[in-house]
Image (cartoon, rainbow, N blue to C red; front, side):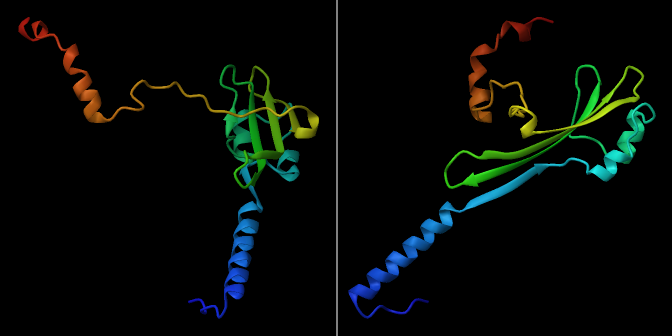
Amino acid sequence: MFARPKTVKSALRTAVMLGALVLVTACTAQYRKHGWVPGPELLQEVVPGVDTRDSVTETVGRPAIDSLVDDSGYYYVTSRFKYSGGKEPKVISRDLVAITFNGQGVVDSVQRYTLEDGRVIPLERRVTDSSIQDKTFLRQLLGNLGNINPGSFLKR
């Protein structure tokens, strides 16, 4: 695979070159895009005061996020992250398209926001933690042995 070095100097030079190559490769930035927002062409087809929730879904598509509390809007989000070596990913850009609806389900407004419009809003999915998360099936089974009341089996 590799040619055998003829001298210590050439072996050292090869090792330094390989080390530099590994270092440069490990430190190069990688970019990733998450999510999707409709383009201007699709958004022009959404007419406030005319389109409904169903027509927006048909024209633009179902959003990744919709308002959970009061069904007031659809939110399309895309984010671009920069990954550099072992550092925490950095948000390079974030676009959000908000299509809001009135009480009758008719489009009220179509708005586009970017990072330049304000502060970074961390998008998180919060899930209730389970107490059995770190336990194996056998550990759960054996842990419940002390909770069994034999008297509950005798009552009929």
